[in-house]
Image 1 (cartoon, one colour):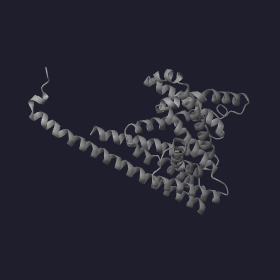
Image 2 (tube, one colour):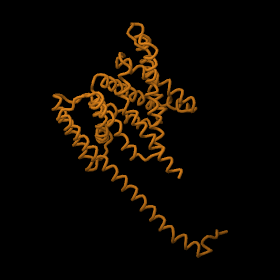
Image 3 (spheres, helix red, strand yellow):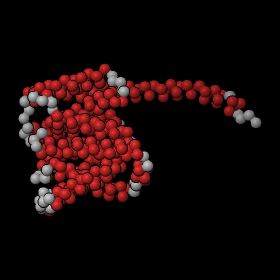
Image 4 (cartoon, rainbow, N blue to C red):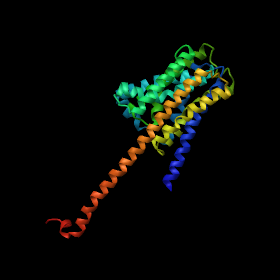
Length: 328
């Protein structure tokens, strides 16, 4: 019963995390007239404050000394911080400049880019269904490029930056709160320096926009940290296959907001490109679920065989008292 409750709670945490990430396009326009770079700098500064308080409450500080003694991991943290700043900044700019649908495409194709990077950089081998999904995704980008008259740069930069971020995080192998604290610590000084310079030049909106606007800019820390905390709670309670399915909630919500709320155009060629991407994701999801099911079935067969092999030995030991008597 406890296991079912844990899984149910994990599912709710996962839906909450990806739901918040999917609805975040509603938040960024509230921060205007702040520009994307100013919003990004505030997000970096306030995120460190929120995560620092969380770590203080949880008393999770031991990892800092260990990290400082590992230059390679520090370098990976710096790479992760750099690419996620590109991702965050471009996403904020996209939402506030009428490109929500194109931004959502970036997160739709991100799993395909991650797989492609695994092949090119890590030497991973793909199953036939994965090859079909990646090829279909590539065809979708071509269709969209023809429709736009140029490659969908926003989508591609978002997808590749987030995939690179994921690769760096995989190599660092740290918890969600800890890694975000380390990344924002790397970004804190340049972000704070930029905000101070902006204030000295008279272009900052933190104070000039009023108390309400300043509070919204400070809330960027909560907007960043709360979904991450929910994601971490989900990750330890539900299987990765479930998280893999939930990850599509965010771009689905973003796509729906782009069309229904922000009223962005969807010409036929854009629908065709998105349709191909969705076909690729269906192939990818089907293959992942089939592989997970086969893995579980194989593990069950091995467990049954091990139990069957152990049963005769146990029976023989029980029927021969001398077999279990130690030699003196």
